[in-house]
Length: 266
Ligand code: IPD
Ligand code: CA
Ligand code: CA
Image 1 (cartoon, rainbow, N blue to C red):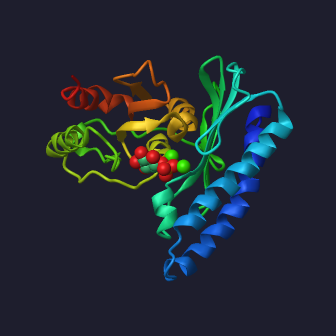
Image 2: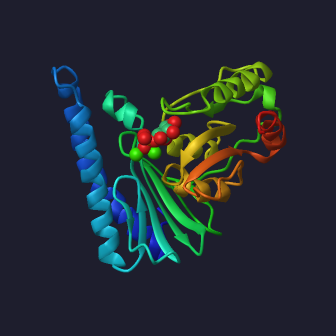
């Protein structure tokens, strides 16, 4: 595996260490699903356990680096020049229901730009990673976005709306607008980090989603870019830079997909 940058190596170590505990925890889920209490509390503790292992490893390597992580929030807040962006489990609902489709996502940001990152699916043993200027990989193979030319023949993926969303109707309208333009039904797999990785390796041709958080896609940004894909952030909220709306795809269908989504932008 070509993890030849020092930062990627640090992420890799943290990722592998936490994955061991995450896989063990996933093994417990099945048992808990049939218990009357259900797996809810257990999942939130699995989330925190995974996160703690990652953060401890990263801080061991660079005690002064900033961290933005979904559960723990911000650490070393003043260091905005070097930051790790972490989602310990992306795809929690899948995890909670014993569905083997979730990932650990860790990105490294320098001067407001993601420089490298890893998204690891511990169940399928798929490691997506990229380092700026050095391409994107899935395990030992270089990955590229698909070459699909027409939007109508594309396989797309999306997610949401969340239960708490205040723009559910808008999101559903967008979904139906896009559905009507393409032949294959749109997928919803429930892990933004894996959705974007799947675009990077050409399994999906495009992905869009509103109301994401930065940690859902931070590592995905560099993986997609290094695989030759395009990512567009739209309707940015300057007051809340963690919130993201994104469109990610290969360059052939990008313009048309953006056109469809932007029809709904006020
Ligand atoms: C969620 C997943 C899901 C997306 C949600 C995210 P979580 O992250 O990425 O695919 O639709 O918007 O919040 O909660 O599983 O870390
Ligand atoms: Ca997430
Ligand atoms: Ca999460």
